[in-house]
Length: 460
Image 1 (cartoon, one colour):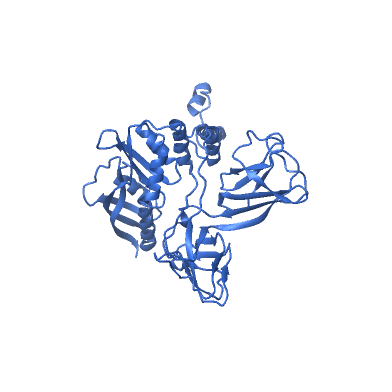
Image 2 (cartoon, rainbow, N blue to C red):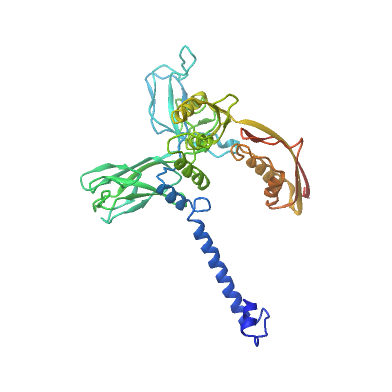
């Protein structure tokens, strides 16, 4: 802009930063730079590959007819040991139990899905001939919110009401409307298409901040709740996700423990794993994948696309088997290193039914390749070494967390180094593998073997 000024006004010779004309030019340049940035961001939001905002990703994927994966809660079977009573004991549905936060981990809350009845004179630890507990009860991660008042209807089309708490497990939402004749539960739908003016329905909308909104129809597609002094009510569950995938015998605390209960525990792994909702990046992968396969499997990539659309599957890689017409599908499940036989059979059945006749599908676990690394970190002189070390260790663990490295993705020392260098208090980093860094093929996933961290400098 200054060069342009010199060409058009050669008599303007004061180009110092303190000159009023230059100040105006710099202010204009700053405003135009910001405008250019916002134009680029707006353009990026048009495409799944480049967008940032989850709300826009949800809109674009809905145009493809893709239903995004919602949060699901972990479910266990729970056992209660009690003092034998002279009459049957009932532990009521909705009773809260939790993990022990004394270990430093966040407390994870669960609730009983149904009443547990223990007959008189029994302890709750009775087992059958196979050693299985007789008096087990299903529990689900999260906390119930009952009869939350959303507001009253004003009779306008497409009214929206926001749920107060987050994160919401979408399939737990129940909405009740009172139009003057008592409360009635309305039905949750994905779309108002094919709904008529009398359809008592609503749909959920997820906002960028994680909030969930209840939206009603227009009066033509979906009924408008009649004006009423009675508030619209909602029941729902908050929680869900992978945080509930805790270990055996970790759900042992009761916030309100009855006197007759001695202890409680979860004796087995969860029978249903908790799953997080899809991220923006996952939406950008899974929605196009659903369009490519169109409910049929032909190419190797089709096997992968079908697999990653399943709630049970986090990552998938498909290769040709050793025998002619054999297909090996390697799958990383959510919350575990290997597939259970039930999940393996389910994935096989779902995908094989869509594949070409004459091919044999084998669903396999990932092949894990352990990497042993040495990490040297020098701390800035005015930072304490111990807190920096804790943050570095946490970053290394997160970097190698199962699922963060994909099939066939090599470990590159400089990538980890650059992540550590971003940490506050770090002056220098050197990362090296103990042995030769192996080439990772399409069936393999890198994970951390041993990590030798050396810290120097800083305040000890």
